Length: 110
Image (cartoon, rainbow, N blue to C red; front, side):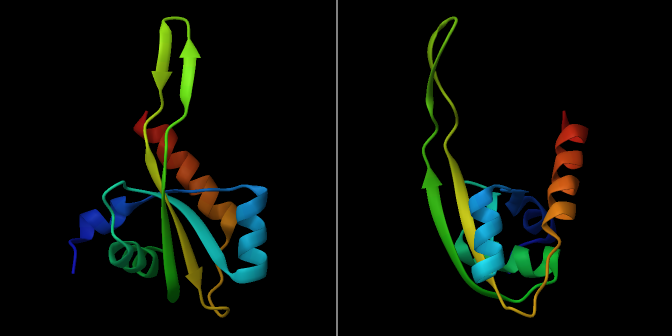
């Protein structure tokens, strides 16, 4: 069992795209950007506690940061982790509200 503050920090932001919307509509899969060191068990626990849903399965992917050329030479964006969280069909989540709340939290932190 992880502590309460870590559970609040594990799910960084929902990923809202055409693919993630299609996955949610067809397969009840939510897509999140999560902490790099988060485990599948922690992601499951955080999703169930923060979103009030029943999680069936969790898949994770380590995403490589893109290499970008800028004014001062080459640079690299940070690596990050993506989680695909499959929920039960009875669990309903409002994706628009979730994305808006994540955007507001992001503005407050800056």
